[in-house]
Length: 62
Image (cartoon, rainbow, N blue to C red; front, side, top):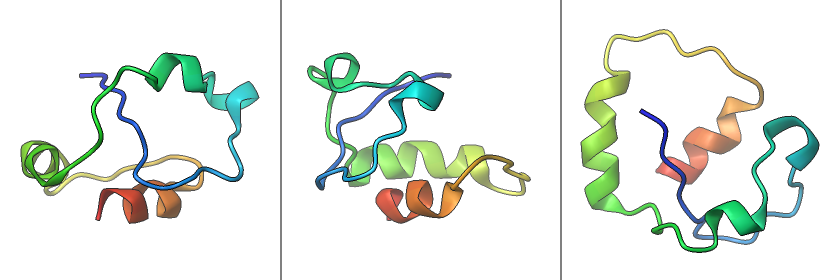
């Protein structure tokens, strides 16, 4: 499942050249909120997640 969300705070170091995510892609997307958090948390339960700079991603999801 791929889903984009707008961030709740200003992004100061956007790595568009790596992620290929830019402001145009997320301009009409919903803001990540508690409802979405409840929806996605079960997907991460008992999983190993590997990625680049995940701390900032998980901080944004809190």
